[in-house]
Amino acid sequence: MSKIAIIADSGCQIDINGEHEGIYIAPLCIGHGSQTYLDQLEITSLDVFNQMKETDDMYTTSQPSTGSLMKAMEDAKRDGYDELIGIPIATGLSSTLNGMQVAADTVEMPITLIDSQGTAHVQKKLIEAARYLVEKGQSVSEIKEKLEDMVKHSGTIIFTPNLNHLKKGGRITPAVAMLGNMLKLVPVMELNSELGGKIDTLGKVRTTRKACKMLADRVVERGANAKDYTFAIEDVLAPEEAQRVRDYLEEQLGPCQVTMRELPSVVGAHMGIGGVGIQFIKNLAE
Image (tube, rainbow, N blue to C red):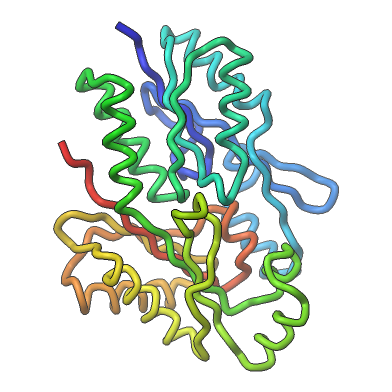
């Protein structure tokens, strides 16, 4: 019987250097000027956000290098694993999924790839579920089916009051950014599962308070509930707005299992200071 390891990228927010048997993580790359840093190992999300706040600098992000992915897989092979399940950040945000396939082909290990259609909390919960099912002795095909069902019942909704970083990143035009800033519009966006997790605009509101409510409303509209789902509310140096989102959510659903923390830099770097996101994912159905 195959011994199965889980391969992921650092967008999942699992500590690369932590103890997590059977889980191997390759760092995403963070660019600043002419420098490139390895996520978690050489720079953290809070490092990026604090520098953005001080200087308004633009950061770029990219997938793990083929070498980093190969190292993670070779570490798994060294530890006795002979098959991989890859759970990367959404294909709509990164080419990491394709990179995993290339690396696996190079090190000659079979890999089954599952598009998380998200990152951060959603990705982390999928990884934890995969590891649990591996330990239960389930086959790769059984695990893939259950994880893909979890993906279908997950989502990520975000807003940013700062359009300059979206403009610099090429996600909106300068004209749209200028008009939005003049009118003080706050765009609310969603990772669209039909587009592989690409960012799609849900609407625009005039205040961050309305944006906070729209995030919570959209989660409820998507069918999430306190019994069967876990949630994460993550921000770019905007803890008050993050708490407001939680308050709106729990007004509608009652007490929920919610993780509160900073966004991963791979998302937050493109949103700018003040950005907030909420994620939800259905618990593993056994």
